[in-house]
Length: 496
Image 1 (cartoon, one colour):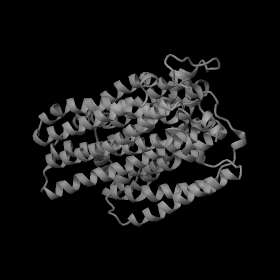
Image 2 (cartoon, one colour):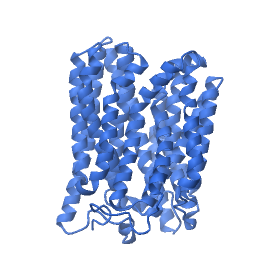
Image 3 (spheres, rainbow, N blue to C red):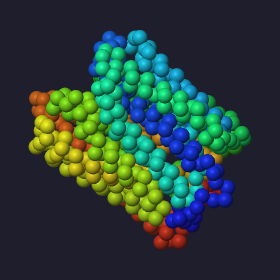
Image 4 (cartoon, rainbow, N blue to C red):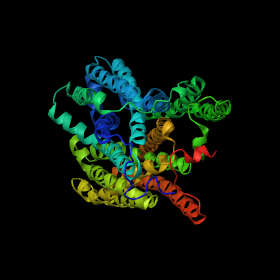
């Protein structure tokens, strides 16, 4: 019953000999696309001046990318399952490089926003191919290590964005220096494009499932858009006038669930197979990911506002102030990927506890230490939080997808990441809104604002911790009753 992740399990007799090279190439491309979620934050003032953009238009450069990234994930995962990972990966990577060039050369704010929307869609097309390739190429304990590398990539790219953006702006000085935030993708992307055709195997083809559920695409896209658009608009300074979309969005998502069951009952391939909900641990793992990314992604914009607006730090110094968290994530994610075979869900429980503790202590410290000493005083708690965060991301991906059939790996990974994107949008809007509310209520007391916001983020992480504990109890109960808590991919679905 522990065949999939048993300690020391080998890759299997049919393992692709180039699987680690393929992983390296896809992680470079994945890092680049995820870095663009946060790297632009520090460049927004320069972008606003460079293309004469309004504050709302400038914020759409960040928020629009996240919106289209989230919308593309599930349909792109389904196409990767049907057409193969390599062609979808190459198309997405080429589109990402091209839209990065257009973003860097954009002469107006409208052109830049449009290019960023297309760039986000390209990044969303790429992401499920990366997780799907890991499902296809790796078995046993190696899969945990591969997902550990993916978790490190996700955590480090998000946390490193402000640092990299600050470095670029400090080197590329002048009114057009912000353009290099986008141009930096060109050499990286072109190298990945040159290596990918030989390094990335053509896996995941399911010609029988080539039919794309267009009604499902429309329903899911409309539902996700209805959830994300009000949050993106609020994040861009547009207020809450689009909040009315949330009601229709819930209705569309409920209709989507009904439609997918109907499509599956008719024997046609649905966009998201409803049987995924019956795969052990998938729904709970997706919930953990959504809630964790709410708190995790939401704190970075708040930290940038606190250090830059409140304490007067430069963009580079502000980015360096949160580097301990990024270093902790990168260090622990790879190690956690190796340990997940032996430790399982206990890793995410311990990791979430560390994140909660780190954020709570950072909240206490920053409430009482200001000025130049604030970054140093918060470094220890942020490092602890980062070490915990690395124990959450990669093990949760591994444990959530471990029993998913390989033929559904792309859409399952896309759905999982869609939840993470929704959580990220909720967190960015919610925690930024909390920060602004406390700031207004206290007459501009940044210390109280950052402290209260971090306490709020820690409270969100407590919800994720509760979900992880519940899943751990379920697994132990299943083992006690003699039923497998973990299964080979597809074994559970074949019994349904």
